[in-house]
Length: 229
Ligand code: C5P
Image (cartoon, rainbow, N blue to C red):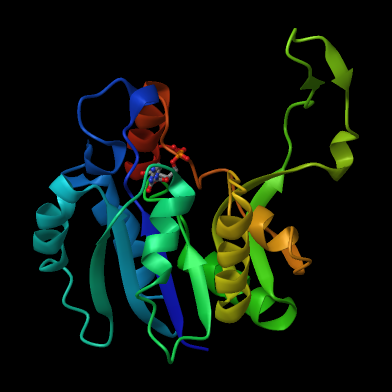
């Protein structure tokens, strides 16, 4: 099944405390986004790569594309929105007609393995959606506004959702349109599909699929890159 990947890269990077957005921070001589893009180039059936970024970074992305000359893949950059979800919504508008599966993958997860992306595609093709994740390591608490603990869900049933999250195209588009119509804003893509009754399965990934969010993550990323982890 032909695959498009949407890579949201329009975040501001507040938690990193840097003055440029995280996807454009340097990691071993290339920016993080460049590493992330390269992970999709040898995925089976990859057809299109769409990056959402803030308008002042669009020229930079266009020039980045020149480093990737995979003939069978088409590259496009679109303007992001005020929330991750709106960035992805904008990117969904340019997905090619012939594409059957759409993956959403955070720009700041540069260590995803191609074999896992393919495994997730297989699950999405079969059931509707697949999400890469790992079993929760910490006990997770639910709290109220006063931080009083109100619940402790059974950890054996909790997974941490990462990306990619991959869906059959029509299902994902329907979920995004419905969320927009209802003003629902979620923190991942699967939550939008779940709320319209779509079937999404967890696909076990690995803990190297780090989300570079805080300065400590950048240190860990350097270790992973240098094969020290
Ligand atoms: O901030 P958050 O952890 O949700 O960011 C996850 C990904 O979404 C990052 O790659 C970030 O660049 C992207 N993002 C976006 N548009 C926003 C906010 C975040 O594309 N408005």
